[in-house]
Length: 513
Picture 1 (cartoon, rainbow, N blue to C red):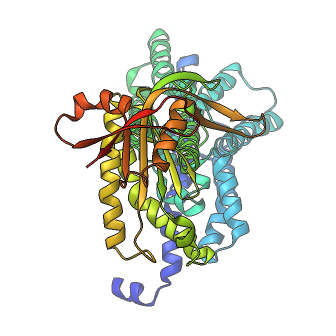
Picture 2: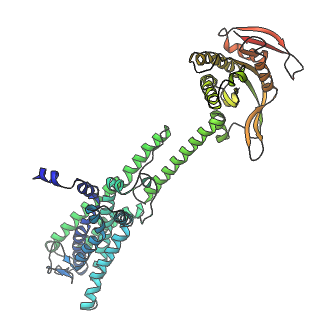
Picture 3: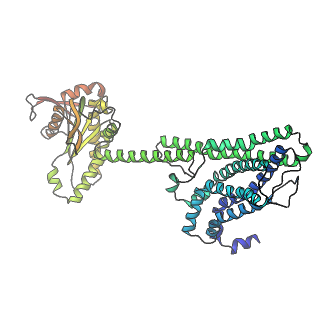
């Protein structure tokens, strides 16, 4: 029989019903409310009057004095009808999916506390208004007992609704998109302190007060033992439900949030689902906003780094080391330029030329950053790199030489890869000394760059590599600073002093063998 149902049933309808199963489980609330009302009302009436034969309500069907069990009265029937009307869109949605019905379900879930308390007020109002119309003024004990019963029912609503809402992950995923579940949604919510306080008051303090009144009025034990036992049982169950609510609605989300924070700290931009609109939901929504901000900042930093340098970009964003107004620094400057680029470029179309340069830079730039260098700019087929302690290169002159030798090997691999229209050669010039780093330009367009005599000399050395039939030239000051770190790793050949354009004094230069 079960196999026939699976075979001939509507799988889609069954799936929709399964997704809304947690929603339908909320509809048992009126039954529990009836138990709470019945138990709290009768015990309170007995406790306040001292009369074990009092406790029935004027609108309760089939009960007499001292009756124990569930009061099936008009308020209970009205509550059942209101719950049915409230849940009807979900029943219709199971039969036939409709976005309008789905929107109604979402709105009702978002306002479930408001709607539940409104239903409770209506049913309790009937419990008092109709007897007044039928019998006139009511004794004060009835008003007090109704108030106690209302407090117990309100506490039950908070515990019962929270206990279900904290577990309805499948339902929320079926009703909301991933993007919607990452942001805070409008809706009525109850503060956490009020949830916990209502549980303590409704199912701990009120029962103790009633016990005190029962014994104060010397009500015989055997006349209220059944109702008293039912009340204590309900209070125990609902207190445990409250603990479950605290665990599933507070502890579990916080533990999950802590785990996601660790993942974000490790570079994984994960977000958390926001199911409700309480304090935990606000905390989760704030966490998701933080993750979005971090992702945006990472993207900005990554984009910024493509046009400047990821190291300078980080320093500019942090604004802790780089003086945006300009500052003096010790550094080594490297210029690298392709030789005979003009005749080489004439053989290629515009798109081929751009592709060639991108491939070329893809090969030769990694040694720069691998040796703590910062690519300051690309100038056509040339690249300018900076090595300075300010940006992570403590042994800046030696780092520049190591990078140059690495670029020489990378160029050989580039030529061997067959991605060029001909053999590609470059020249590299390295000089160290003082320079100035800062923002150059106008208010509307700034570029963080480096200027000074050190930059000019490095550029001039690069242009003289052809004259000395070598690919790497290092100035005397740069080699003097680097030699202690380099040791015998690299061989250098002195080329004497050379006059450089724009320099009154010649500069001692060396080529790297």
